Image 1 (cartoon, rainbow, N blue to C red):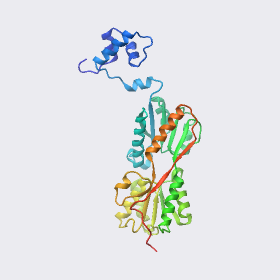
Image 2: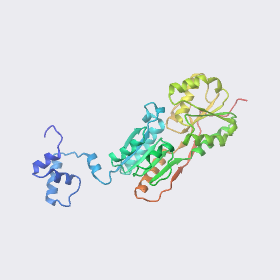
Image 3: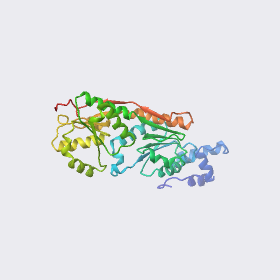
Length: 337
């Protein structure tokens, strides 16, 4: 056994016991095993430096202590969903909270919600956090899901053991609209790749704060190459606007880099802002004005809700967390008349 991993069968043969007995000791099922036998097995396991398969132990238990995080690998990410600032920040915050709560985290990316059912069953998941799917898509899960789950970024009608953990998307949009209006801007542009779910709420809030008649919107392509071609084709129209609000920091930064490469000054010629306030917002030049959602608090709340759902405690169908406007260098008073 010098160069190979110690196996249960090796321990059993050396002690003259069955593999079932050794396995039961490893898994803590010792009610029908004598104290002397348990001690002999444990001593030899320690001497031989036996390393158990944690996956096997966890799956064999009623409580696996595994929380699954499922992320929509949407085409807009072009195969790099885990590199998206919002997704990366969410996973980082969730991993901290999940570990501190005594659980293990497993991450799966998919475009098919049917995979979630298989994922939950395969790993005996105790709970699931779902990121990036919208209401219509959740219909596929209704008849199959028995595991409690939290919708982290989207919406799902209440069908039991579910909670929509959302943020004040409408209010965040409204805060940005009022901010731009108070800076003296008169014509604003909203950028998004869709007009459903959270992006629609942010747009509606923005119109409420700025004035619907003064806001125009562009449905931009998801792929970067196509999106920049779209900007190129509509570049002549950009001068109509002095303020731009994007549905995400990613789109705001991408647009800002495009117009700056074309000679526009930010914020002197055009103010640009995003949503989420990812860490990169402070690092770029100019730093990006954004609507901040507290990622740490959201992750903490997600675990709290999952634990409550596991205990079958009554949990409100939807929980909405506050957002805050963070002003930085990418926005300024309007100087155009």
